[in-house]
Image 1: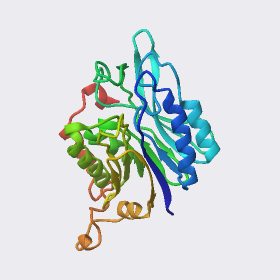
Image 2 (image 1 turned 30 degrees about the vertical axis):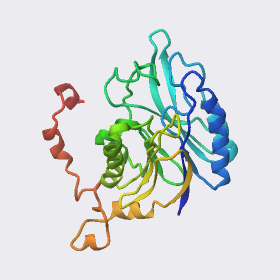
Image 3 (image 1 turned 180 degrees about the vertical axis):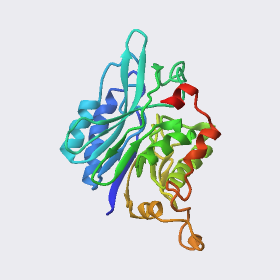
Image 4 (image 1 turned 120 degrees about the horizontal axis):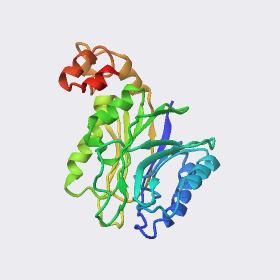
Length: 285
C-alpha cells in the first residue's frame, strides 16, 4: 500500500536564532499533513539547537505537531550530556502520530571528537552512540541514520539486517565538493540494502545547493537542490519483492538491481570475521 513522504529542505535560521526553526517546523508539519503526508522528514539538527549549551528542546513541539496532525515527523536535535564539557549526542528522532515518546537514534559514526566544533554552524563536543535501533510503523519498519554516515555502509547495513525498509538519513548543510559522491552514495545505500533511503539538508540561503532525495533500489524517485517541501508517493511492495526473491538467470530482464541481497543467497556471515577480525574480547562475547 502506498503512502506519502514530505521531504523538507528548509531555509534554516542560523545558530543564535535557531529557536525560530521550531515554529517554522510546526507550520510545515501542518502543511505536509494537509497534502496527505504520512511522514515528514526534516534535516539533521532541524529544528535544532546547533550548539551547547542547548537553550531549547524542540521535542515536545514536534511530538505535539505529529500527534495533532496524525503524521510521523523525523527531526534533528541534540541530547546534552554535560553542559560544562559541552558534550552531547547528535540525534535523529521520529515523533509518532499517536503522541508516544519519539524514536531516537544517537549518531554512531565516526569516532569522537569530530568536526562539530570550530566552524560557523555547530558548536558542541560530539559523543558517538553505539546502537542501531529500528522502529515499527503501520507503513513499515523504519531505520534512522545521519548525514555523512552515508560514507559508512555498515550503518545502513546494520539497520537493513534488523529489518529496516525505510531509512531516513537527514543531512546537515551544503555539501560543497562532496555533493556528487554524497548523492551517489545515497542511492548506493538504497541499492545494496534493498531499502528506501530519504535525505535532505538545511539551507541558510537560496544560493546554497541542497541535496534532497528519495532513493529506491531501482530508481531515484525524487531529488531537488532547491529549498521547499515536496510530497512523494512511495510503496514498499517492490522492495519487499526484491528482498524475498533470488537472483536468477534472466532476472536482469525485470529487475534493475540484484534480488535477495540480505538473504542467504548473498550473505556469508561465516566469512566476515576473516575480513575484519574482532578483538579477542569481542569475539568471546
